[in-house]
Length: 217
Image (cartoon, rainbow, N blue to C red; front, side, top):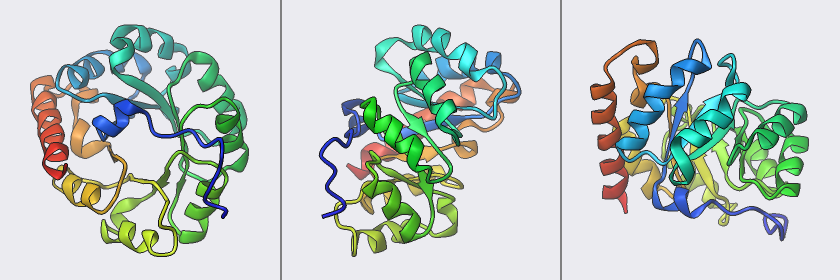
């Protein structure tokens, strides 16, 4: 069966226990620091730094040292194998893509690092899953809604998925109950914190997200 990949890297125990991924896009990677500190202090255990932010590769080692092993830092918006190699070499704990790039997935599988490739159609998502994805990223998830996860599980009962794009805090329990291994949150969680907005408000949203995930379990 194509969905059975012997060397597929499973979702980490950290992600299974804390199914929220915070997605950060900033004007500069140096803007990450206070936001990452606040997220970590308020229960967020998985943070995706995106390559649309200048300096992300260079700043990643410092961020990993900053949070320690209790928080997983991954790299997102990867679209090429070269970017995937650089992310792995810099210490990323997982890789995220907005597209299905089979070369990136193969590289992640070879290096035993979790990879979450993005797609929307059943053909895209299953091709990523069959290639060895840890979980496929339904993107943009707002377009299809949580019921889409249940529809996917009809023909593909083993598929693991993560919704991303337009997912709000109130949507967390519904997506998790639909079978998502985790939920990826950008603006609804981060808000204006990367532009100088209130870190106290970010902390409150983080706690809400963690509580919402807990209520679904």
